[in-house]
Length: 385
Image (tube, rainbow, N blue to C red):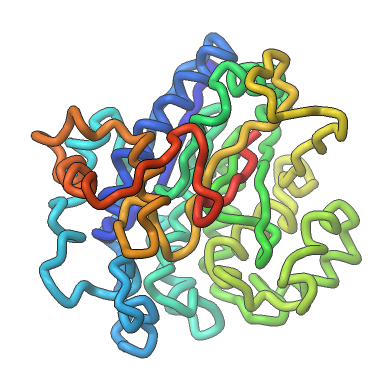
């Protein structure tokens, strides 16, 4: 089997993310080229699962950002013909801002399974606008690829502060760890303060049809509650006690401290993916496929400009939370300025709505040090390898 890499994302077409595509695409392509140069004998594709399944909230009480007067509000429809929808259709945005992106259509089986879970009286993402993030499970079906990096559109996959040569060396050094020669699937991820698994950035080595079908079956079952999670499989502390390998991953999370699945996206992609990768026993091997990154040696200085041996982790910048750096707001200018300092938009103004919008920001943005992110609101660093 030839070695193939995919960098994949999922977009439900919500207009608030239209102007994330340009920056995401440029850095995803740079990372793909970097990994190919490091690993060798490898091909790479950028993939997107594009759907039109976004469901807006209907109650104004649920639209927190709308009440706060913020522009970025993916759960609520725009109350005016704001620029959020001015970028055109999602397909036209991709055509102008990321023409190399290969767009995938939604597998009817996955759509049916997600809808069954969403409409189950015993399950379902409580915020209906979040349901489409479960389509990230599509990644498990990509069996033509050796490894898939799933990254949300608000992730900068190759940070300018981390030399591409160091990232290439890292992937060359750790390829067999990420893509097991024995053919078993393996997942690497980081958690966050809420959950042991952050669904916005993770890698799956050796996607598996059996694993994919097991996930569909779990969604079709349609069972989740705040105490015992998906399929009522158990309280978080029960898993903590039963599986020593999960303890370091879980011990600092709200899920463990409060012994609840009632955490951010715990009833949606983050809870589902944690279950499937770290609790579920797949048919192919008898052990969960989730793995932890190896620890960084204490004497290793990863602040040095070059890491030719690939000992330092490859980290990405994840702009999670409600303030997005492609959306200019009064208290967001430094973040936007740094983001645009690493977005090639000036040559695309005539062909890209978002590039033209970014150019219109220029006089309103502060001068920033392009090599140094702002201390506040600069996103969270997450490991990729």
